[in-house]
Image (cartoon, rainbow, N blue to C red; front, side, top):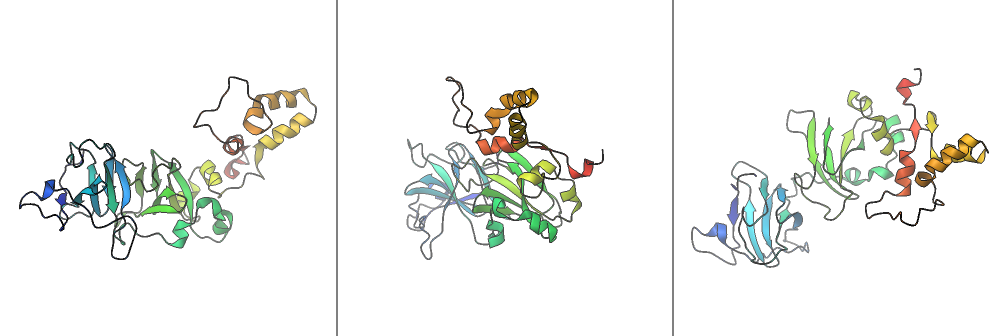
Length: 288
């Protein structure tokens, strides 16, 4: 657990006796509405979870808050949000949590290009033009290693993380334990790497990941797919029928599950399964 070294502050509206600032509850005048002159507070971590905040953090709920600023010489608050590490500022309220008010310059505000979802990028065209693009790097709870900047989030909510000064490569733990929960409740949070198609790093990247990022084309080198399996089944051969019988559940909306085969809450979509059924020869190995 990180040492609770950051300095806690109280609201000027509720002055505490000298020496008691670290234990003062505050009714924060800064709301989440984003009105002029007000800070915008972002959810960072629930009770018992870790908050990594590149700015001022606050701990509490409703009108009761304890502000925590980075320690001297640091720009980040990194600590566990718990009553054992901070204090029980709202006794009995299990909704206590940490929020982060991120200064405009840290992390760097993403540009419109940063905000462009990877699924809407024409990665093939950008690669042909030699332009960098955002490529999927790691799902939540995994590590992303990238030679360049990394972004964490989903859809249009992203936190951009730059390599340290003088460093070319960065490794990021893509989880709400190590980064802010910038899209609370979204299980699709992930990391993406700002990738240059002309770099050796891109050429060494996983061809399967390049594919799901829109940076690969399997049509020319396709070996197997749901489309080819279905076509073989229609050909009338026994082999084609057997193969389709074994794979129809992963390929077809028309497949009827058994009465006791109920999909759970984390079931994969048919589109995801169809993508996983694709088999192709990576271009570098076509001559083997």
